[in-house]
Image 1: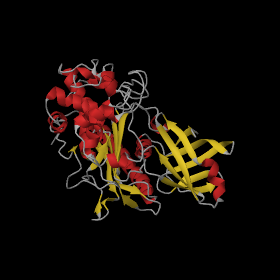
Image 2 (image 1 turned 120 degrees about the vertical axis):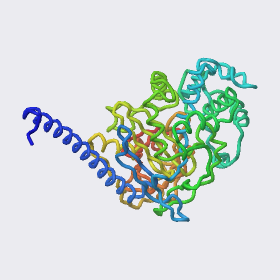
Image 3 (image 1 turned 180 degrees about the vertical axis):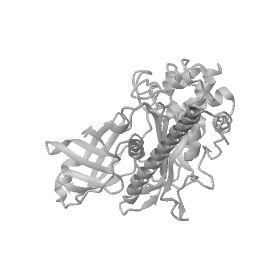
Length: 459
């Protein structure tokens, strides 16, 4: 049969099909390369004892890599996988901020108005705090009180009213708007505002306005559910101990949510649309106010590999769990890391996965090699160092080993690998001391997940 198409037309069709086919092949090859490199990296991190949980990489909403590592429940032998549910801690704040901005779009509250306009029995010293101050952590409300009773308080039930009363009894750390200080109390106050404005419980408002519309059926508020992982703390023997119980009413609108990588990807993809909020409102939320934080979202690079890519992110941590949602909106790349071992450095894991996506090498963690020191040799290192405003890094000695405690986190045992340098087995970290003066070192440097931090001595 003679073709009705001229030869040149057939050639064009063949060429176009070839181009499309080549494009599909290149996309498939890139997808496969990312998946293989991510698996190689995470296999090594898991083998080193630095990761237990589930990780996901997506581009344009398409999953490039998704895999679970380690056990969701050590007693039952249940493994982490794509369906495992994790507590996500302060990622909850991104949802709380969205609910507040939805109410603002509906004309039901004004982000520039005083929080006292929406609360009964509002403390007088809160009158100058606006809703926007609470959203951006610039309200002056104190950070969590970190002391020996912190873990006990996290196990105690609390009503929104009780949380407000506790916060209201504390003086402000600074004039609202003057500084940035991360405050769970501020976001719990926003939860109470949401309840006052809607006349509904926070969990119900969250379900009606975000979770159900996005079909996030594996997400919610609380600590129950058949697929919920148990939380652990890594130990120096290479295993993990069960973490203290966690009471979600205490974390409330600042950190009480649970979710899965799949549900958080649905959340991420909705933020590319106007389903929840207009794009101009979302862009306002992703614009830094102070200290690389916008309205409910962090706005900063998590590693050198991501420095050239616009990023919005949020992490979360509660006893036994640590989580991170990392978005690169201009690249349409999403990385989600959820862990049920609280020592995990999710930012480092995500930063290395991002490096793989952006065509750079990942950094494989390695342990140091232990030496022996005289116990007196570590005495100059003992003391308290200033990590960040309101957060200290404290070292105590046990023989020639050190115990390091950052803020309210569990202590980490450090082993000497040189006269002034130490390493951890339970997480990917190295610590070294310098600037000896009057028998005490005046500064500590920490390499944690490939990033370096310096902290001066306080006492």
